[in-house]
Image (cartoon, rainbow, N blue to C red; front, side, top):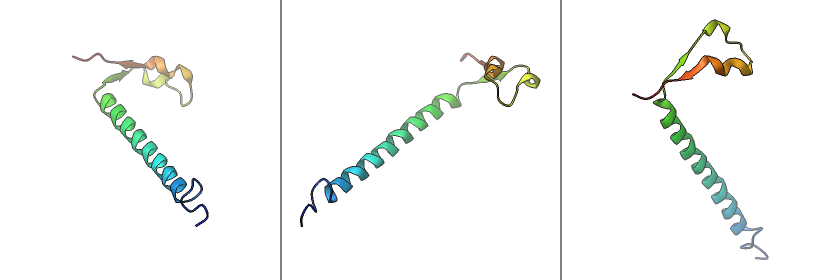
Length: 68
């Protein structure tokens, strides 16, 4: 058996699988929560003709509307 249930064997494999599945679940829950909050946040875009494809100045055309 020589290390079959050691950290380099089945136990290590199970720990790695649990960590990857746990990270996937954590990121999925975070993505769902972000989507829920952003789905009800209304915004307005001003001066659409001035928006460029790649520009850090594009954020000034985006205005988040307040909840009513």
